[in-house]
Length: 277
Image (cartoon, rainbow, N blue to C red; front, side):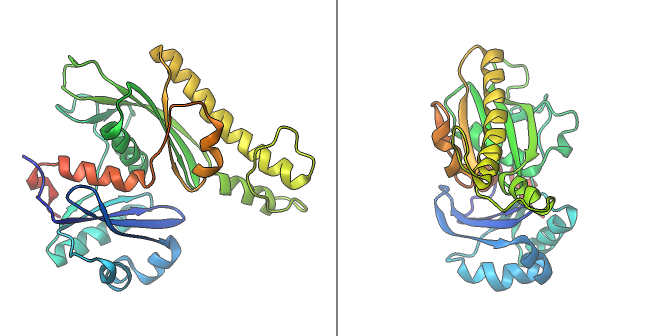
């Protein structure tokens, strides 16, 4: 049974630096979207922020809210309480373990509940869109995450479609650049760049950060291709995507707002009873 047949779904992605939101119609078309600095949202309070700065932009009142948060249970609880007071459906996804019957995506993570909701949701979005058996999902944020998503055999015993093999977490592009500037006496705040042999300090920093990110992603992609004996499709999302998209061999897909799209897909995959606050 499909989850509540919503006219509109409000998806919220609470990250370390920014909160992104999107109002989707039933076909995943974006009706409205926005972003705000996380510190501002938390200083205002999540319920007040939603009432004052999000709902006025909603061209249609959402029938439910789906939330991904790396900010802890407090934010999720605030959103759940808000949904309850407003009479809205609610979803806060948790990664599904291997053995979950009929799941679109399951994870090999030792403790599925410890897998970041943003990583899980981005991987879920890819599992719903890819036509490839081997996929590498890269999200550029405060941290850079690199996750492998592979198709399972059609006769897999639990009926699931894709497996999250695991992945890597590294400091993000901006985190690296800011750290070098703040933790040293003289190094400037640089921008990420790609150049073979940097000839200035700012270039050396920018290119050094680029190479560290690139090599992590490329090594993971090569490892996944070796494991599955086929090339891995690369999916990029997040703020630094533009700096890297041209550096990799195809197939490369830019999936903007992957976390929000993953929330939408998970909501519509839930049984109706599980969508209530």
